[in-house]
Image (cartoon, rainbow, N blue to C red):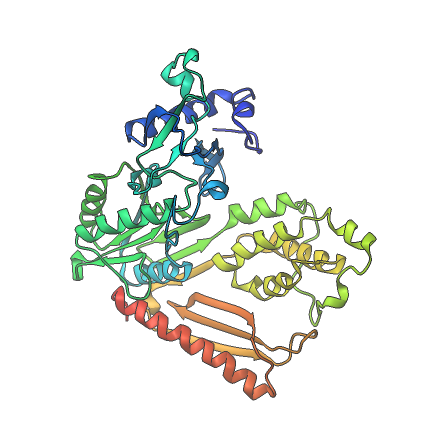
Length: 452
């Protein structure tokens, strides 16, 4: 399946461009799902309450090679600017699995030869029931699908929401409460260290579920156990069975059970960054930062002319793209990204050049990832270090930490310390303290998933 690189921004654009048939199918599929799920009922427009708006958001789902596998058109309520706290919603927080937890789970699976499969829930947010009374304008395309008479007038009929919908402030929380309740009814217990990692059973019957919104990794020593878990989830939710885990959250998974090795990487994502910033034909760099190079506030633009010049450069987008790589599978660029992140408010030419240098480093190392060697076991190793007074602007020190399982990183961090250390010893102790706190958390997680 092929598609143009840019996705449409509006319903009108999606239904008039070259690949309009694919987008129309996605829109119709979404509307039919919403109707079948009884997400709303059509009612006369209430006099006492103003309905919130809605819009289509278009996206392309890609596989681990970056190829388009599905056109997506979720309908999103415009709750972000029209919902009122205490009237239309209460609590909004919803947890997701930490990337550290996902990596620890994958390391355990490689060490114990566990099967890892994946599934996601179709239109997940639509399964949660709303407690609040919320009205929404008719979505574009609904009138044509239902063949509503034009005489009824679009302003006379609205949707009274019965189920949660993407875009509502409480939607993510309502969905999490719904799936959490169902997993617990299946005998799963959430881990103390991460409420989105669930465990059930022991030995051959042991099963781990890692939940990230509507994506799930399911691990067990027996495929039959995984199949039964998927069947249990499918009893209440419509799911896509994606088989063996190969790609989640932009991270590619390469698992060799015979050799007990599991690799994670982000090659397709890395290539998209290289292409986005026009560095495909650039000269590769050997390091992400200049040896001994310093980035300071003195390099920020001082004149209005310099500031105007920098406005044309997508510095925030550059750092944001690099940050997800640094958090996912590339600890080797975490120091560089941490330094670049200090200048998001007022970046200068030197900061931009430093960011592009990281992209050129990725050009040379786009195949690099993390490999867990299961035969090395899940003995936790931890390292900490500090760069005393490394910040030239305020002389704060830099803390660095690295936690390893199966011979490869599961947790890493490079951050500026909150207070100024008076000596290198003091800086080292601050870094060590942060590292130990992370070790305590990781040991709790490993105990929860039976890997300690």
